[in-house]
Image 1 (cartoon, rainbow, N blue to C red):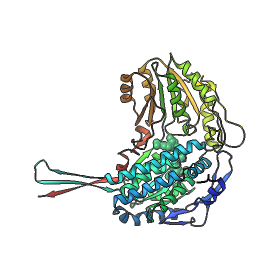
Image 2: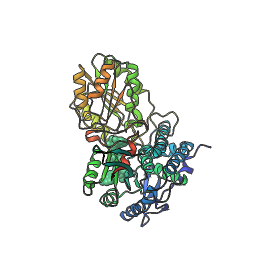
Image 3: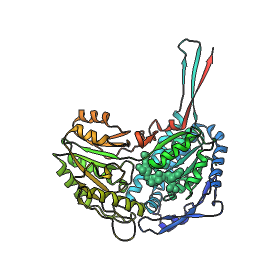
Image 4: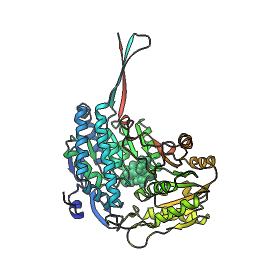
Length: 487
Ligand code: NAP
């Protein structure tokens, strides 16, 4: 297949709302601009849904729910499997679109396409493995039957940082379980999700099963849906701040809720670690997605005996990265999402430096068009620095030395977040001991990346609740019904 060109792709990608199987403009015809963060220029416009459009999308999901729940699981699985195939065949288009609207380098976008598509393959296999139980009651008089049924229409709200994968890991299990849905992608990156919706439609997803609304009136469109008793599930990936607000809204009707929220990942390097491997892991954990991932290492705690070697090697690798527009072949670091993100990273860095941190490499936003920031390593970062507590969401790596394992563990757990922690050690006992003691939903041992469609992704504490992927992922979209049968 010939490589897609930017113009053809932007001309052909759907830009309307998908409601009940029809692509249509927003009521009133308004549109919202999608920007290229590498240039600050407008790429294209998509429909800007109103409150009425949001309601229409839920109407369509509700209307399709009963029929969809009764389709054969194999049929649902085959649609996902076909979509997996189609996304893989069109990987270059998905990757280019993602790089254009989100900024990450093309190689990373291809990585996300492979990762995102894999959720469809995984859940195509899970769709036929949903089963209940049959038991005899302890007194022998009754039979206890449990069955799994789809939760019902779900609202899916996704962030801009992984425009495809944050969608597929919700849509995959929902389709497999027999739930219909309204998908609301981030307004900064709606194009990838629009193409995905088109692909699912082409692969035979029935009308009304997936409805997609893009909007700049986010709160006004979503809140009435969350408060609508016909909605049965809310799944959200995004910031803890917004997640908390949505949990409050969903309390009214005690909605089933999954929350994939912010992180503040610690990255621990012990004196017995393979330092080169730890640096390799640090590059992945920090620089994947330009540092704009909930799983990004936010705080590096390194044993005092190896901190100098680690920081030097890490800074050398960081300083060799090439900043630029993600569509350029040589580029390894794309822009941040917007000017606000650059301002926030700068503010956190300045605060750390004012409190005594030393810049080993980087330390500046890049001048000129686009929202670029230099890959940065900070040494001697005091625990009072704001970036030890707040998600940086950018390419800045603060390094702090520790003396004992107990001190490292205390610092690692000293946060309200609990998504992922990384640890590097060659001592097996220490790896097990710390994996148990770290208050996180996920732990990476000697690896700087934990995301895997076959594993349950999710956090504890203020990083949220619920799991996406793995055997657990489909459970978020299923209810357990118990039927007692007297003999
Ligand atoms: P965000 O501001 O919370 O936005 C996420 C989504 O929520 C977007 O679609 C946004 O729409 C929508 N939203 C915002 N306000 C809303 C409201 N009042 N009602 C309903 N929806 C609303 O987060 P973000 O800046 O896009 O993403 C970054 C955050 O996501 C980080 O904290 C990161 O850690 C977290 N994240 C977590 C995971 C995980 O799996 N744990 C994965 C990726 C990212 P608009 O685009 O229209 O504002």
